[in-house]
Length: 486
Image (cartoon, rainbow, N blue to C red):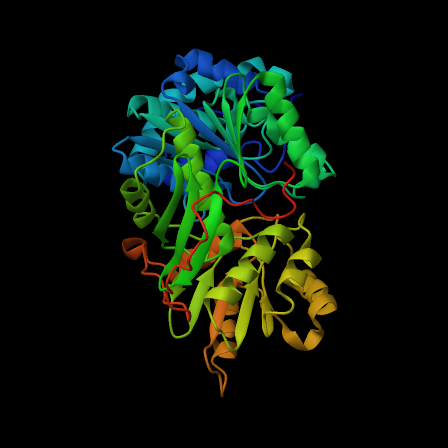
C-alpha cells in the first residue's frame, strides 16, 4: 500500500479554507520525496506551463526569499509582468503565488486548483515512485499554471528545499541564482557544506548564467565545477558584481554597488542590515544577467528598490515599543539578523520572542543572540506540530543564556504581550522587541500584529541618520569580502 495514497476528489461545495486544508494534508513539504517524475508528468498533462515564460530561479540557505522579492521589483520597474513563486508562506498559502507583486486571490487560487485537479488525479493514480503528488509539487504546478494563464513575461522561482530534486527544478532556468550556503536541513540535504552545495548546484542548467553570492570555499568549489560541467556562464560576487559600500540611514540604507556597467552610487534601499544590502546587489546582478549582462539604468534600480517590501524580514510592525519581525531560522541567518538589529536600532532593553522548529540548531540560534538581547521569551507555534515545545525550548535557552534571562510562555500572543511588558519596564530608554526563530513563528506573530487592510506598515526610523557617502579613491570595483571561495 502506498504511503501517500491518492486523495478523493474535492467536493464542489468546498470553501477556500477547505481546499487549502485538503492540499496541505498531503505529503508535507518538510519531508522529501526525491523525484521529478510526478511534477514532470503533471507538466506534460497540462501542456508544459513551466516553459511558457523564461525563469530566474533562486536557491541557497538564507536570503533567497528577500532576493527574489527584489528581483521581482526590479523586473516590474522595467515594465515586465512578473510571476513569483515563493515558500514557505507567512500567513496565507496564496502568498506563494504572486502576479505583478500581489498574491493571487482566494477565488483564483481555488479556480486554478479545480482546473488542474483532474490531471493531478491522473498522476496520483500512477503512484510514481510509490507516492501520490505532494503538497509542494501541487502548489508548484498551480503557480506554473497561473503564470502561463496570466500570462507573465518572466517567472521568479524560489526553490523550496535543496535544488536538484525540488519540484521547481522541472523548469530550465535562464538564470540560476545561488545565495550563501551554510548548514541547514542537514538530515535531508547532507551533513557538510559541500554536500548541500552539490544538491543546490542542480539548478544550474546547460547554457544558463549562474549568479553566485559569496560562498565558503567548499561550496564555491562545487558550484564552479557544476557550472563548468554544464557550460554555464558564471557571475561571482566580489569579482563580477557586489556591494561596494553602504551607509545605514533613515528608513533603510544607502548603497553603492558594482553592476554590469560599473559602480552605481547613492541607491536607497528601504531595508535594514548588511545581509539585505548584499541580497539587493545580488538581485541587480541577476536581473542584469537575465537581460544579457546589460546594465540596468540607475533610475530603474532606484525605482525597483523604492517598491521593495520585505514582510517578515527586518520588518518593523509596531512602535512604542518598536517590534521587529525576522524569520531567521538557523544560526547563519540569526547572526545576520542580530548584527542588523544592533546596527539599525539602539534598543535598551531588547527582548526577543523566540519560537523554533524541532529540527533546527536551537543552541546555535540562541548563541547568535546571546550578547545582544537582555531577556528572551520562548514560546511555540500553534499551526504545526513541528515546533519545539516552549518548555523544551526554555531548557535549551536557560543552558545558553542563563535561567534568569529566560521566560517561558506557551502562546504566541501572550509571549508578545510579556515581551512588551519586559521591554517597557521602569527605566527603559529605547525599548525594543524582536520576534524571530522560524518563518512559521513570524507568520503567526505577523497575523496578530498586522491588519490585512494595513499590510504595508511604514518602516521605523533607526537611530542612525543617513551620512554623506564616503569618498572612494577610484571607481574600480573592489574585491569582495575575505573568505569567498573564488
